[in-house]
Length: 332
Image (cartoon, rainbow, N blue to C red; front, side):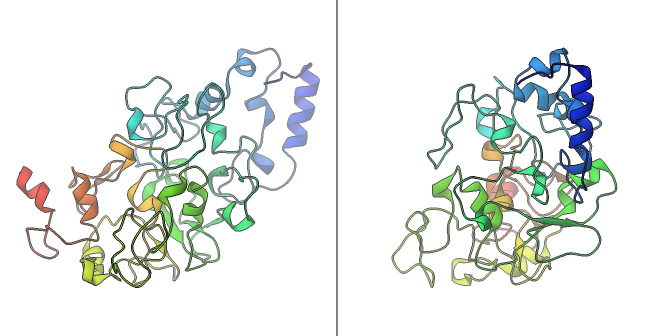
């Protein structure tokens, strides 16, 4: 990263960058873009790699900004969970900074030096783009942008609703984020994630997903659809909206009506995975639907089948909607 040649230049650039309004929830954008926080004249910070610069504010000791690495000091479960640090021991539990690996299910791989924060987040901000996610070049506008709004009123034309934005902890809390579905036939988040994890995304009947749009009809499922199938719609496969609606800690779903729970709730990427990761394999949410919410799911969950049983009732041994999954029951 280039250093500014003079203190006057740093001050002038910082003032220039601070011009213009910032949208609700944005940072590193408009009036909140303060160049001197990352670019300095002759200080060590300006000579560090991109991950180190980002983690100087968003690391495990973060207080003024949301921590995105491993240990959560903020208290409330983070909506995206936690990244693994470079060289960390939990490589399989989520995105690992510095990893050179190709994205599972896709062909994209990091540049030399491995995965960096700016592979997914725009360092200088993307106004009206949720969490400053990068706009992927060469894709349609609808597949590049995840819009959002905040406040007590949900704008269902936006992909994401941040219900509260009073404190830093609240803005990033898992229970503060709701996912709209402005177009009931697609998932903006799934389309964005598909930029790296290509094969894991699609609707029933797609070659990479299996199943058929109107039923199984000899096409076995290979992957869970990320769009096009609402909770409970496929009752013949034991998906139960009544069970999902009865739970206290429901996993996130998309909603065209802006209502949770509702018959239009659709499972997508964030329903089963933390975007950054957590302490479970693949960043999965081990959520029984009951107990205290955690970044790993909830205190009632302890197995991936607890997650499956949010919607699917095969193997639930304690009654249709009465308690934990069969696996969890057997462990006790």
